[in-house]
Image 1: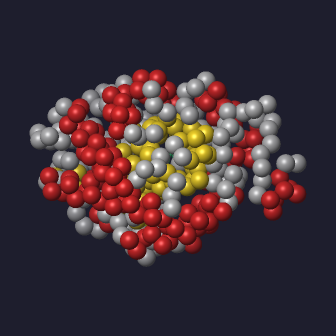
Image 2: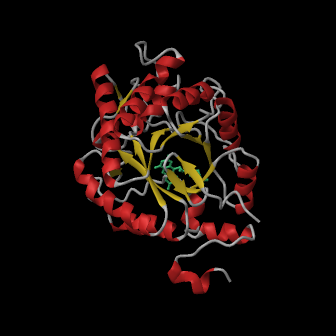
Image 3: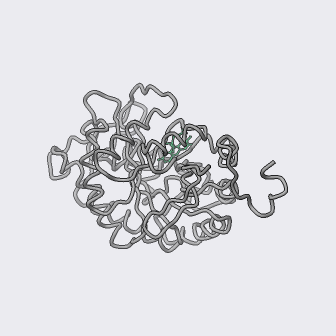
Length: 340
Ligand SMILES: Cc1cc2nc3c(=O)[nH]c(=O)nc-3n(C[C@H](O)[C@H](O)[C@H](O)COP(=O)(O)O)c2cc1C
């Protein structure tokens, strides 16, 4: 039987061998607090590549030191980061997977040293810093930082870039009316709330011609906030700007109760896929091969992003293949033990 999960998928010039994506997961393991790749990153990402994951996406990598979630985040704010990232990319590619990096700024959710910045001076909660409201100059500098991050990602040899516009970090803070109370051209209307992301996408595309993904939080889980339907026009604009796929997550813009159950965000992915006519990735409590196959075969999403399940089982593609009664290639060194 031909499974959808193990069928290849082409985005622009990049063909993934299957639909399985390692979702971005912060490791907080740059122990020298310089944003550089360490041995842990090399082992962690390469293991999932050996496990036959089609696309390995590196964790949120900060485009400025101030944009880190913690002091131990991976970084892409300096040319000094390129060498380590390049080595990591080559290790993953040698194992047959494609590579992506999520470029990010934590905004008001930064717990790294120093002040945090955001569209408006409203803290996420009373334990977090009160951010400094960004000036137009701050906005321009941050757009430029995303552009330089994309340029470095290209130099390091990544196949794909994902812009992190989800989980209540800086870009998401502009998109949502719950965190964006600005009265200038970056707040108020939907067009204005989108402007910061629009400028980032345009700036990134000046230095990056490869596949471009954007991760969004397609629900604020708050009646006064955004829903998946609200993300349809945003996704249409992304498509017009040349974004290739929207990676659909949700929440974390404001503290909220989220009802989680298997595949709890898939419906949002489906809504955006149908509403905006753009390919999407589904993520969130997807744990079995059958569940992933259902999502793909019913055309609810184009790619399956897995986070925690890949922490538990780096060889999940093999587990899923067994469940779907199909065989997948092993690393040649593992052939004697792989499919029996
Ligand atoms: C340890 C850990 C770190 C994470 N770091 C990031 C991140 O850097 N960027 C991001 O967009 N999401 C991050 N997430 C969210 C995951 O990518 C994913 O969306 C979420 O865990 C739901 O998927 P799952 O049920 O397969 O774990 C992280 C999740 C975990 C468990």
